[in-house]
Image (cartoon, rainbow, N blue to C red; front, side):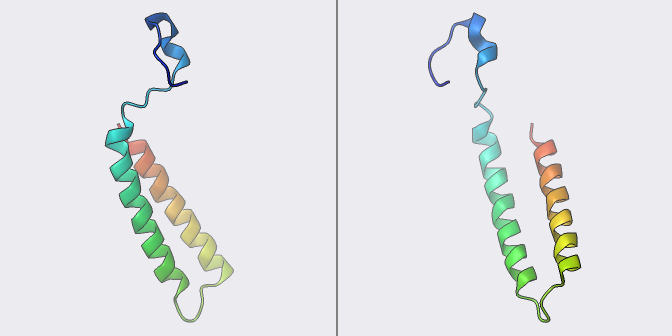
Length: 71
């Protein structure tokens, strides 16, 4: 909910105060992933299904590390 709250209701709300710090990091990571993915998919010969799966696992691990690093 996005409305004023009493201190006793604080636990019912999402704390969005960190978004201003996180958003630039997440947008930068997103753009880097988009660029890398486009380059990966443009390879010739085209990546195999196994290579695509490995790339996806690698990117997912990087995203997880990025999210875990947010404070």
